[in-house]
Image (cartoon, rainbow, N blue to C red; front, top):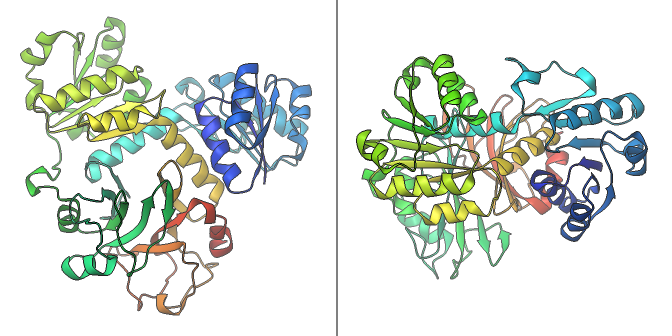
Length: 452
């Protein structure tokens, strides 16, 4: 696949690295000469210095030969116009994808298909808000991902923690743990391996578990049962930002009545108070120690920091955990490396806008049938929810009679009636079933063979 990426910022670079690793031919079009040199050092690609709204530069970057054009600059206008020019001048381009943040362009229902030549729109703030909402509604566990509408959770456990002991095999863990679970992968010395029952755990390993059982999570991760997440009744949100706006619109009335929003800018605070009369808006600075005491934030069930300042988000959520807040979510917008730092301070979830946006884009490029996707270990492992369609290669066959590549792990199934199961060899692939599966990124092209 030939891909032209307009914009070599954080999102563009991560998308480029991901697609280049699959064998796609990547070209960047970027205004900054410094960023052009930087991206060529980080990604196996060609970089052209220029504007995405310059037709001559689009030609120089090979737009006429591209299968997909992805516009992810920091300017909505550049992204929209670039896709419009590409659609008008290069009709052979199949996908034109634009990152658009402004609600003024999107409206309540978003842009209609193919408007201005855009085939797919990604709103990073909306994607981030949707992931946060899923996390709140379907369970908030440390280092854990959730598939909305199912009981399945994905979580990692490092060797030496919980039930993960060096020298023990995967099969022996199964024998002593009575609950259903699948070991989807092991992250070992910077690489993802797909284990079998005989695989032994080594020092430094990180195991990826997928289960539909809360008890399995407690046992495998070593998490005390008292720390298992309950639906919050007292929620603090810091920052009247675009992510906050999308999140509040997503909440139903019962949730909004539980929320206090802290915003130091008086105009923004008044705007949100008018837009969301169900919530309590506090016009105050979170750095004022008295507000923590006066509002008794320490008794909150959930503290969510959604400002545009990564450092403030991490510091405030870390402090919230220190004074007794049950759970905390920090938004990470600018530097994905901050995510691990936040977790080291006890923050339960560090939500990277970049990672969420890339997941959404890659899910779209994977095609029909992929309803959800998560990546782990900087994209080295991909976990999907796939809806079985009539074109599925193994439709009607039992799992024991199929011959997947070893890199694919079928970890869970959600039936049409809502029943969730960890499949055994007798499971029969049925149209409409939702499969939870994982695959090494290097082998992700196999999904196209399998599911298309």
